[in-house]
Length: 456
Image (cartoon, rainbow, N blue to C red; front, side):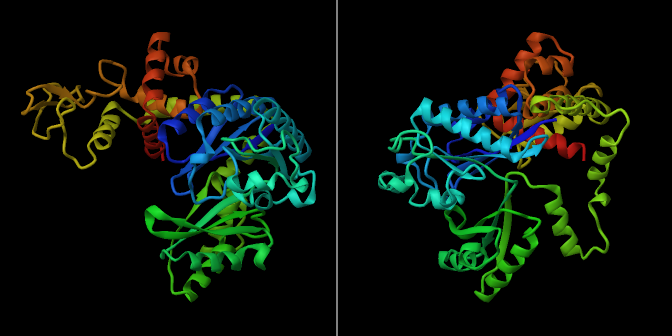
């Protein structure tokens, strides 16, 4: 089993239609899985987390760069997070069956291809760096997009690949290989950026803090707060709770509360267990007491092991798809899904006519106990409608549990053929489901989240 993680950071976090195109592109690529993406409007940045093998990731990243060059103009970009290019940074992380050297080779090959095809200056960092002063990402990104037009004239900043001039709209890009890190932010109950900057200096290594911490102060305009934004480079040496406690103490000294924190992207289970161990003061606790971890170890130790995931963890994905399809059929009915749909469409509990928008609506009781779809009549336009009118579910007899399962399968990376196989529908129905749910990203993602809640 060869698994590499790739975490491209794209300089776009506000335009939903652009983000949707990136997501659909990555979900459709063969041989990879899009595990997660995190868009931040204040940072104007999105972090994608993918896994796959080397060739599949290389192909997906070429496609991502092509779309980013086409859709992002760095001259118009504004955001709190430092950035120097449309695809700002793209690290490869060894997960299973590969070495750091494999990831370094992959980073350098992607750098060569991006520079040649798009004429973007490429700088290698972390384990792929060709020079010691380029190991740290902040050193390369210093000056950001606007400053790089002068910075690149310095012979010390000759790109590793590509031209000695900044791409006019896509800027530069930084590609590398590194161990897993945790992107962790702590939000403070003040709008004073100086407070966040003081705390960031207290925890980051470059100003005397923890060796494995990079930190800077950022402003969250929408929330009228400030943030200590961090990369934790080695959570085993510098765990999350240790950094959080120092920030909490420093904030208290400034008379400022810690109002929340967030993890951007994915985090190793072990890091969360460390936090639980610390705050719960557990005695003699170990990873072997974590249920999911123990199950994973037990499966790995079977005489006849489960199918080994190939490129993009295809076998693992098939196991998950089969399990969820069976679980939905065993534990959920259409009434459960329709009740969720009503809450989703009308969260305040007031049914509104999908034809005219009026809330002057009368509900009709069903004459059949087997019928679970509620019927209404609008007193304003006098038209009748039901729970599904105006949605992708209208004019179809497909059970709502199938739609719910389909949303989760698509989020997992399923295509039309997979929908046909796991939902046991014909090709035309699979195409209709696919088209409907891929066009309505908000509905699809909400349905996928609700399925996880139903099954937990």
